[in-house]
Length: 89
Image 1 (tube, rainbow, N blue to C red):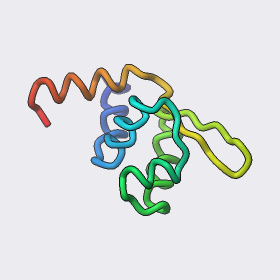
Image 2: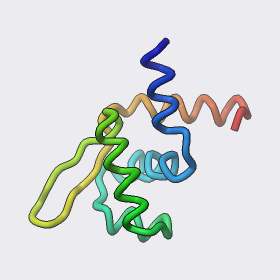
Image 3: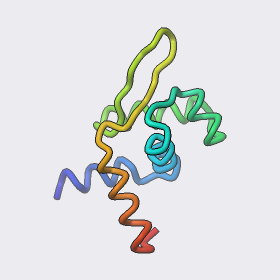
Image 4: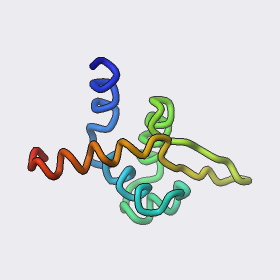
């Protein structure tokens, strides 16, 4: 249960939930692409992405100057879908 609580706490932010939703649809995006889609400041977005990566939610792949993010564990999408289905949001 501690691990579940840790994960839920790590994603308990609207921006983070949107990032997860985008990556569930697109597989992999760089910071600029995510920022463009979310209309979010790059510095704030980078903070969220770094934290989510540190907490084991995202993978990061470097290609030159770009960092591409993807979901580390796609089961997190099922958790979000379950919460939305239960109308708990």
